[in-house]
Amino acid sequence: MSLTQIIKFPTHSDERGSLIALEGNDMIPFDIKRVYYIFGTQSGVSRGFHAHVHLKQVAVCVAGKCKMRLDNGREQEEIWLDSPDKGLLIEGLIWREMHEFSPDCVLMVFASESYDESDYIRNYTEFLRQAGL
Image 1 (spheres, helix red, strand yellow):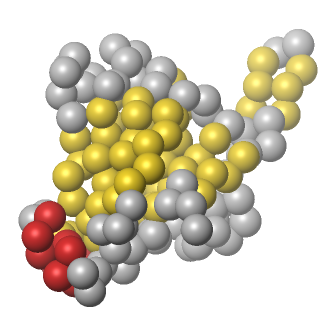
Image 2: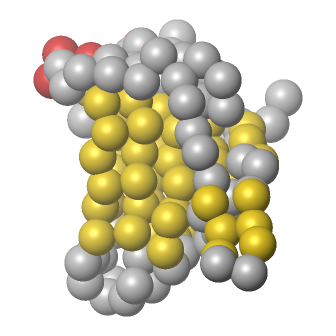
C-alpha cells in the first residue's frame, strides 16, 4: 500500500483563469475543522518532523512547491507537491516532514480536527512505539 494518497482536484478554467472549489466530505474526504497555511519558509529550512495519532490532513501547495516525506515506520515515500490541483491525504500515525520549499511556496493544509497538542507525536522513537514497531 502506498503512503502517498494523491487527490486530483477538478479545475474549472476559462479565459479569466482557473478556479478549484474544495468542500469537506467531498473532494476533502472529511469534515474540515481547521485550515492553516505555511509561507515565507527560508531556504534550507525543513518543517514538520511529527506525526498525529488521529488527525487527518490534506496538504496542497497553492503556490510554489515543496517535497513531502512520509514514513509509517516501515517504509518512507517522498512526493513533490507542486500544483494547486493536487492534494496529499495524510492520515494518523504517519510521520511527516516538509523539505525544499521554493521561495514562493504557500502550503495550505485542511485538517479534520481543531488544534490539539495531545494528538501530536513529536519524537520519532515514540512514534515508532505508538505505531507498534
